[in-house]
Length: 153
Image 1: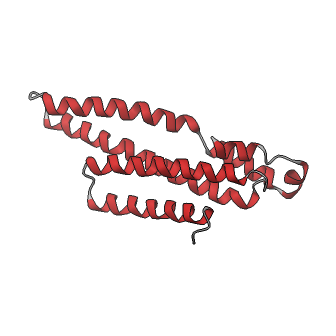
Image 2 (image 1 turned 90 degrees about the vertical axis):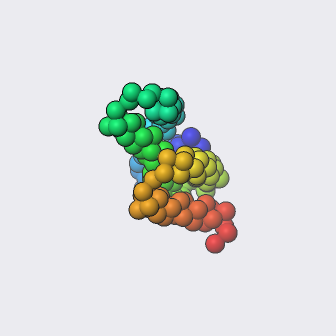
Image 3 (image 1 turned 30 degrees about the vertical axis):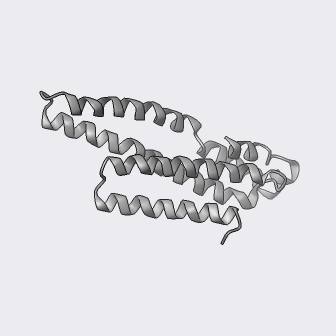
């Protein structure tokens, strides 16, 4: 990701001396791109199974409920992961090589878009009000992070 690249280039001698290189290494470890890629496969599988609930009249109520829960959990988990990654990037920015901060900021914007997209899918799956409110709070924190890097605040 763009943010991982920014962390990779925060490894200069002065970054190592200041401790910024260690913060950058922590960010690289925190930004597990494979979790995000796996979420796409999980979403496709969850939707495929959800479609079965619309057509299979013989499906038990328990199986249908389990499938619906999974269809809600996948985008919820994606939104939470995007939020965690964005917060990690935001915390890294003060340590980032100043010549490449724009790449870290691009990472925030890309993840923010993914988080908002996941939220749209969450809404289709009719989450309980408390989950909806919790996710809205995460989205507001994401928006605040974006506004900050865009210098809109």
